[in-house]
Image 1 (cartoon, rainbow, N blue to C red):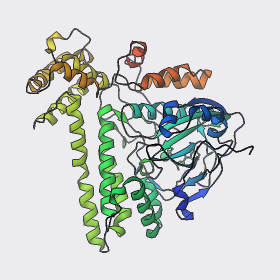
Image 2 (image 1 turned 180 degrees about the vertical axis):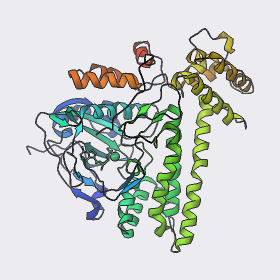
Image 3 (image 1 turned 135 degrees about the vertical axis):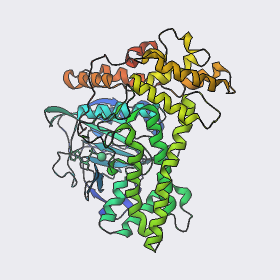
Image 4 (image 1 turned 90 degrees about the vertical axis):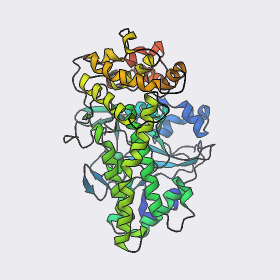
Length: 497
Ligand code: AMP
Ligand code: MG
């Protein structure tokens, strides 16, 4: 390594964990690093000067130079992949550079993804392809702009080296920023080895880091389970309210901090269909859009199992307590989802029929093949009018049979008449929760194809900029909000490795 660079004031708490929690490993240098993207607003949030980072970003975020004070470790974890337990996964291609404290006092991990093999690589090459790196960059930043808890993307660097998948592809490294990289699968790793001392050490670390309000409790482990369950229920509700499909909700891809993590074959719904599956490897539809709340509960039950010996010395009692906590998850989910739906529909008071009203719109959208994002976005046009004043660019036009919408809209408008705020204020508030722009699959694909096939980053950069302001209708980005052409066929994503 040449002269050292120190853009980060690392404060690596994970290094204080026992040795078997991680492996020390340096990134493998790449032949021809080229900086593709450096996230300026994120630099500011992290309290890192963009000016001082930019000149060293290429060598740092390719893994060619390790910054001063870096931990440079790969974390151990296990996980249930599509329901099957794998006792050892771990960071097979990711290396944690270290943790920093932001000006707001938040601890953040900075991790290189695609930085070369680690002791956890199994048969993998430790690398990432350019397309999936740019997809994670775009979609994670879009989720952030939508206000949804997520890991962030700090940088993308092309390696100048090929990676071999079904075809030969250009390689890249993503620099990811996360509240932590501790997963449900991290707990499973130690529980599978019956190393409950390690489970407790990990749980206390997670409490200190993500749930400090529990630190003073005599036994904080059931409250920890409940807190993680609440965070996940809130998170999945947010996904369901924007039409996001994660694609691989394995327990190793579920963060205990409550952030969306590990963007692989993720995508957003265009027409509303609750059975939507995008991932080519999800043949049984386990991770279909509508299954996500139940899968989150299933994953949290796996977390609960790891905590049972800590929750109570009597196993029966501990199981009962843990089971009760898991059974509450659908309720948590529904209250977040319904609160979000009320906002999307412009309702600020609560009536018992609101859930049914929301569900009837969804089933009309399903029957009518209506676009999820645009239906909600266009509703605000009608909150001060009757459906008949819809001039053809309103929500009804999105339905194959407009009557499906009109029938629903009559009930919705009578419901609105029982609401307090002024219509104009309501429209503004509705537009602040119903995005105009999401990362449309066809637009994401165009941006990735231009970068991968022609080295042209302009579509990626334009889409990135547009997605920073998803709640505004900006004429310059109108083409990015358009629906895919009819006949484009069902969209498929391929597992992002
Ligand atoms: P993912 O599907 O990306 O969540 O990854 C599941 C597991 O496979 C994790 O342990 C990853 O670290 C590992 N993995 C995925 N791709 C690679 C790769 N190219 N090389 C090594 N390990 C990988
Ligand atoms: Mg993963």
